[in-house]
Image 1 (cartoon, each protein chain N blue to C red):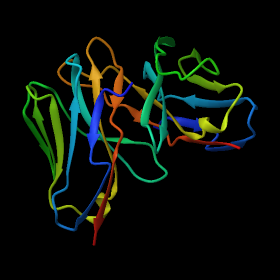
Image 2 (image 1 turned 90 degrees about the vertical axis):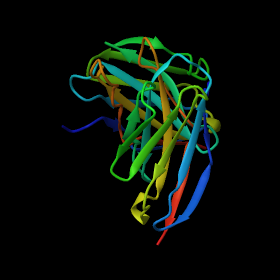
Image 3 (image 1 turned 60 degrees about the vertical axis):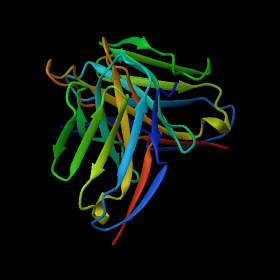
Image 4 (image 1 turned 180 degrees about the vertical axis):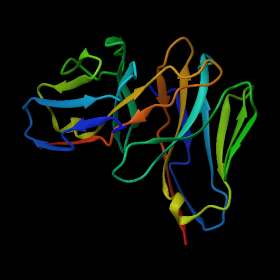
Length: 112
Length: 117
């Protein structure tokens, strides 16, 4: 079922570092690309999202870069903090409906 | 708003038993999703409903799984008979269509942790 490939599976960075999580998709019939953040014992929650007609979106320390021709998008976390330690999921929503497919997730650990 | 409410939060059951997971979506949301999370497969979409009607159940792993939404405020996911490989966290989520210019936010419950022994 997975049509969104996410990497890396896990990531460890020092505080202040810039972790980058990458996702790629094959189906061109996606119209919305959100990222979700999940803390242990909780459900995922929307972090930031982008539409394919935009190449970059920034909200606070979180930035999505989107490359439509390559069918790739990535999440950058500037000045990462220990509180950013969580699992991050990229996702893609199909056009004409609300079927949202998630990547496999990236477990991020930010060392203090 | 109370958010998406799931029950039970934790369930341990023996192989072969029937398991029923329950969900109350956010009031006013007309989309409801059931996802399953495992370490191996990540977050998988099992089925989703729009206005109580199942739209896509292609992610339901096999006939042992069934989902219903009898009204706008309640949905169930049933596994009968359960097997150890069904052990996972099952999330219910809900959403509204969102604005024309942007997308929709999916609001997840806190999950039902299922262990089948």
